[in-house]
Length: 308
Image (cartoon, rainbow, N blue to C red; front, side):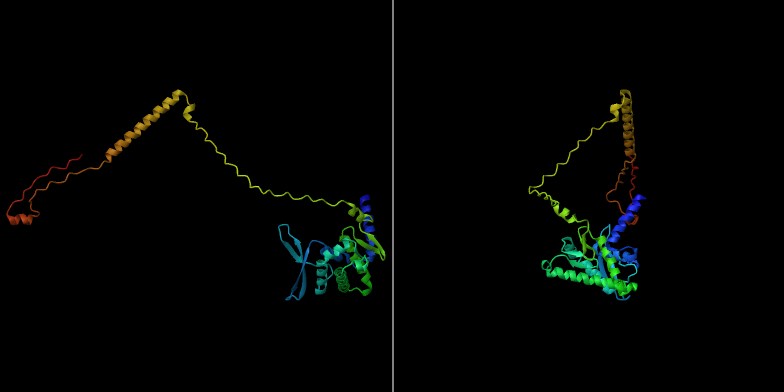
């Protein structure tokens, strides 16, 4: 309970800095203003796209994706319609935020209570480009305030209340060390009066040089290890002598039986050679020739072929 009460006290002190209590924001503009300032000062990207078929100006907000790339989605604010004028003003502030933050961080400019970027140094200490950045930033902020008034249907008399809400939202997102105007003419340093001196008094960070790369040739690769073959252990080396002799005798009988079976198979498959039948010289070839000559054919009985 004590912690909760302490948190309320701290929040009340922060809101009282710009007078942005609930009574100062009766139209609930702070959520839209805070989303706008976070998009301008944060790591998101803003890209415009004019949809001709829908006749609507679309502003896309891109955030880094954990797997790589950027994920885009339409950028919108509660109760405010995105118009080309509002989109151009938001894009202008987003693109020049680096230059604006440079002026704020070195104390050359500060954030006023009327939602303007004002110089805090003599005009001679600002370059022409820096003065143009300040003027362009204030023009875009004015367009945003006018759009909020128009979209919410508020009278011009409420412009000061909208500016205070915008200033407080920007105060929330800016880092410490920035000059802000608490009340007209009353400037304070965010983070405390001695914050800037404390930061400047710290020794600069020393960066260690990168190790120099050697120009020597790389060492040769290690030679591959040669593994020796493990000795083969035969089963017979662990057998008793009696079993070993009995197994050797069985192997001998088995080999003899295989050789005898091979020899018998070879003899059965040996080819049979037949002797040719003997032929007598001068024997007539046909019976017609023998009848014409008047000679009787001589018949010689040939023995039967022998089988080897």
